[in-house]
Amino acid sequence: MSIYEVLWSPQRLEIPQRSRLFRLEPVGVGTPYTESLSSYLNRLAQEHCLTTQKLVMGEIAPLILINEDNAGLLQKNVSHLLSNSDAKPAINGMREMTGQLVTVLEQLTMRQDLRFLSLFCWKGIIHERGLFRNTRAWCHCCLEEWKQEKKIIYEPLLWSFKDVEVCLRHQQRLIEECPYCGSRSPVISRLSSLGFCSHCYEWLGKDTKEQENVEQYRVTIQGIGELIALTPQLRYEPISIELTRKLQLILLVFEQAIGKDLKLLGELGGIMEPLKIAAKQHQKKPYHLVKLIIPVCEKAKISVSQLFLFNFKELGEILFKNFDLELRL
Ligand SMILES: [Zn+2]
Ligand SMILES: [Zn+2]
Image (cartoon, rainbow, N blue to C red; front, side, top):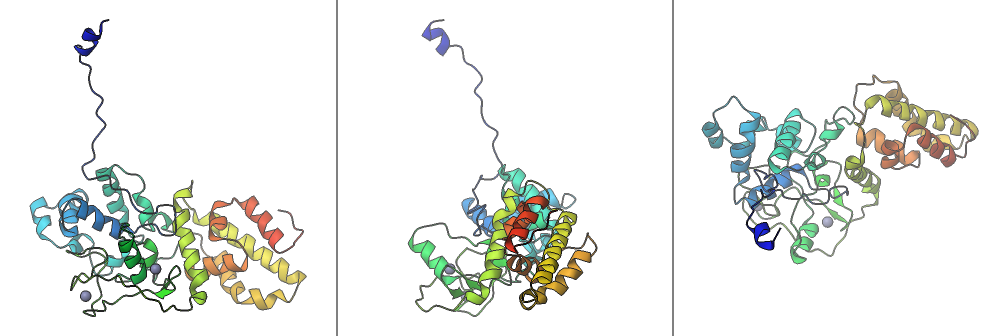
């Protein structure tokens, strides 16, 4: 076939499927600084030159609230979709609405990694009550640093947790009230721009030299960060019964270790009682991340990732080694 015949015999062009919304990449998936779902929605709205309100109520809500009139939805506030004020922080948590929001958002952007921007994958495993803040919180140094270095301004999922009181990178306390107008900003609002107050629109970043002592917060914050980072690595749905078996194993190791060396009672005594209760509890009940899982891992000298990613045998081996025990499973 001559070159002319090739050029003049048009073939169907393979056009990849297009997504309805821009396929914006979330920041830091697989790291402790994974972007939060609320931050992603905010940035996605900016990419489309829309307010978060218009994006959520115009594009996402009609696919969730299928029985409601589309034009009517656009007039309503985002809180209509996210229901009561209690739902505002929960957008980054494990509520059913978060699951629906993620499903629709993944369809519209044709991405599969947006499920890692909230804690929804941990539903039924981690206790949600009291875990999340009701309003936004930020490290003013992180914001200022990203601005100076012309990096993406976003809000890590880590900042949504009540127990994350400081930024370990800058040794600064997270801020919840705007220093200019004193207001607290909702996690999602009609008009909000990341890094700016949603009431007075002032820039919230600031460079500070004074540092806080953050050591007392380190274990908890690193534990939460690890949980966020490991979520995409879970090859199975984290099942409560599997976690219960692992906690029972840790309890057995602690009891054996104390039996061998009574001095360990002082170190492990505080966590034994809650661990005993947890190991016996009904297997469908979720576990407390900050009061149980993280301190148990610390005392067992394992990381949160090892607890969830290692199988029962691997975990047993490392635990026996950590406490110098001869036991075999
Ligand atoms: Zn910071
Ligand atoms: Zn303000």
